[in-house]
Amino acid sequence: MNKPRPVHAPMAQFPVVDDCLQVGGIPLTRLAARIGRTPFYAYDRRLLQERVELLRGKLPAAVQLHYAVKANPMPALVSAMASLVDGLDVASLGELRIALDSGMDSREISFAGPGKQPVELAAAIAAGITLNMESEREMETIARLAAAQGIRPRVALRLNPDFELKSSGMKMGGGPKPFGVDAERAPDLLRRSGELELDFQGFHIYTGSQNLRAEAIVEAQNQSLELALRLAEQAPGPVRLLNIGGGFGIPYFPGDTPLDLEPIGANLERWLPTVHARQPQAKVVIELGRYLVGEAGIYVAEVIDRKVSRGQVFLITNGGLHHHLAASGNFGQVVRKNYPVVVGNRVLGQEREVVNVVGPLCTPLDVLAERMELARAEVGDLIVVFQSGAYGLSASPLGFLSHPSPAEVLV
Image 1 (cartoon, rainbow, N blue to C red):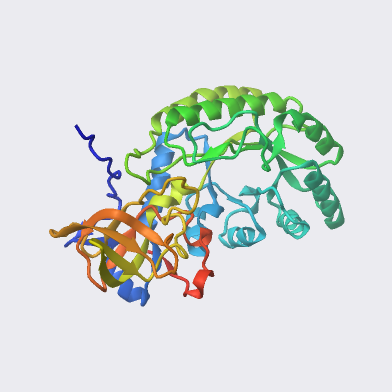
Image 2 (image 1 turned 30 degrees about the vertical axis):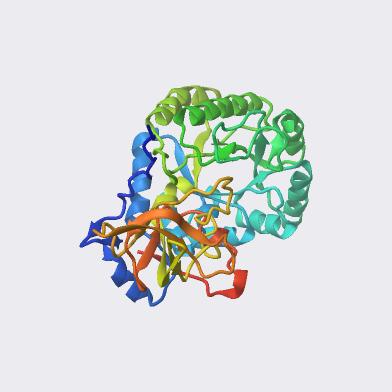
């Protein structure tokens, strides 16, 4: 007996009225006309706010939320997030400029990344943000550049722990890594940071991303807090910042289920008295990117041709992997799996068919949906890729084959 085929988790965040997807309360066809061209990315303000409200309700009030700008650096979106969260985390000078323009207090912005250039470090020092130090050399460079400016720089130590976030899409801690300082070397850096008279804030520990298993996140958070509190005893001053990363995932593929926040919130609630007893000034920070914005965005491309090849239907669109590398399966997938996809102006559509949705590029890798059941679509219809609010446009090879870039809107 054949097992039931797994299906995507329901994509119910965008309402459907008269068989047409609504974004920000606007029918998709009308939004496309307002933008004036396809393809485009659209992000819904309401969904951003609802996601933050969900987290506020599930996590302890004392836990702060930071938005990782790398997930989606669209300036309007970052400004919207800055009004909702407690801080921003950046990974380049370009992202730093966007973060500073958002209106976020510079003291609530942090900068991580293993290869910060001197010009980036100098700008961050001048801006008064917190620099997450990733190596001995970087620490010495920060001290030298800060002395030249006459500023005492705000710093935190990014740790590469000896554990990882199990079952995560990308592992960023444990074992040899370019990220952070190996935990066993941290005491020497803490001692040296005191000698350099840096303004020590605390620790940054980011072990992995895109995890849908609450028990794995709880285990990693337990280990992160234990490590940070142990090393805090050797810190050059009181710990004021404990950024224990995030790793919260969203459902992309058939069989994925949404992350259960309840055990994560309950576990953090149990930890807070211990943290505050041992480090009274410490604020615990959860740093999230994809989980905050990923489900609030869609990618929309227009069908420009419909053809049949040896019995299979191909919908050819004006968008593809050059705009949305992740949806094509070429951004970390080992075996290609479909993102949730619908015909946006015929979401339910009584006439159904199994189709391949492909882009206009001269490569067989340019696939947005493979052998997927959709409503029957014709030239001019709009293909929608859900879960596109994070690692979409900015994570794609826009220059490949020199097609125009898509538009981006926040509605």
